[in-house]
Each structure stands twice: as structure tokens, then as C-alpha cells.
Length: 238
Image (cartoon, rainbow, N blue to C red; front, side, top):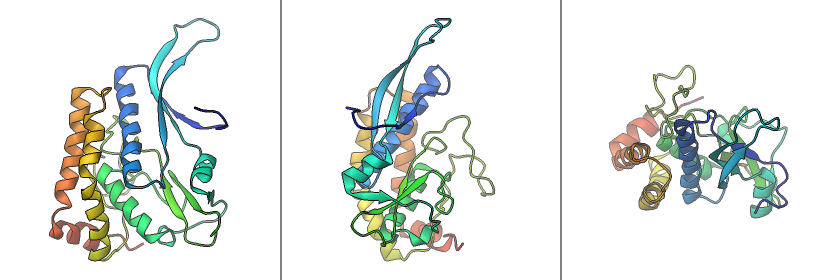
């Protein structure tokens, strides 16, 4: 039901073709993957959206699209409030949740986000504890490698040439902190894969691409040496 939602964001195909629709479906699934790891996340609702020309000069077009949970709805669900008009650095946000987000963004191959300028994230705090470190709620994943749209490019200035190449934007963490989150992610590996496997609307090719991308990530994070090199030694310092 959409009652009492007020305004909310729609994500629909940019072009009325199957390729664009598949990208929308893949991005929808990325939200579902993040929902597996935390309830501090945007929920999404898949719909069939019909667009009609009011002047009847073009045929109606129906495509799959999805609606993103409004921030106010998250506030009601979790008893949180959005942080507005205050600039935060990434490391001023809740540390454990930020660690999960940094690894999740690496999992999906997404560098199109930043906390200081609120780029593709929202910050919320518990309504009864407004002075605690805020929680990051990421959104907009169409520039991620796992979605792999033809228009997606890596964030400018990064040493990668395609969004299919993962690049870690995380800040320093201890091995214990990383292993705690990685163990949690690995425990949910099968749930994540099943979300993709059981989704009937993706083509075989697109489903295979998503599954291969996830398998690669889960294989990589089983190596302590990989964790040390990529998430500790190569972590950003500023």
C-alpha cells in the first residue's frame, strides 16, 4: 500500500526498452541485498508502471519500476530522524554501520557515494538519542558494477577504468573489525545469492552476471591476505 507516503522517489527505465528495464530490476535487487544485512536501509517496492500521453499522440508504455521508501517512512519505522543542515565526515558516522556500508559498496562495485556532501546517502539518528553518531543510509546504485549500465563510469580521479573493477573507498579499520563484518556477510551469502537466483524477471545473462559478481566478492573476502592488502593497507586516509 502507498497510503500516507506523500512524495516518494520512483526509479524507472530511462528508455522504453528491455535493456533499460533490466538495469532497473538489477538496481532493485541491490536494495534487496542491502536489506539482508541491515534494517537501517531503504526498502523498495516493485511495480508495473504505465505511462500515458495525455494528448494521446503516443501509445501507452508499461515497464517495471520501483518506489523507494521515503525518509519520513524510515523515521516512522525505526523511530529515527533525518539529520539536516549539518555536514559530517564519513568517520563521524556510526563506526560499525559505516564499516558494513564500505564493504557492501565494495561488494557491488560502487564508488558513486560520499558522506560529506550527502551524495547518494541520507543520515539519520535515533529520535530519542539525537546526539549520537548518525547512521548512513545509502541509495542510488545504478553506477555500480553489479548493475553495469552502459552509462556508468567510475568516480572521477579513481585509478580504475570501468565500474566492473572494484575499488575500496573505506577508511582504516582493524582486522578484527573487518572480520566481524565479513563473517556476518559470509553468513548471509546464500541468502543474497538466492535473492538473485529466485528472481524471475531477469534475463539469464543478467542474472548470471550478478551472480558471478557476487561469487567473486565472497571468494575474495575469505582470504586474510586480501583483507589486509585491500581493506587495511590500501584504505583511504583522507
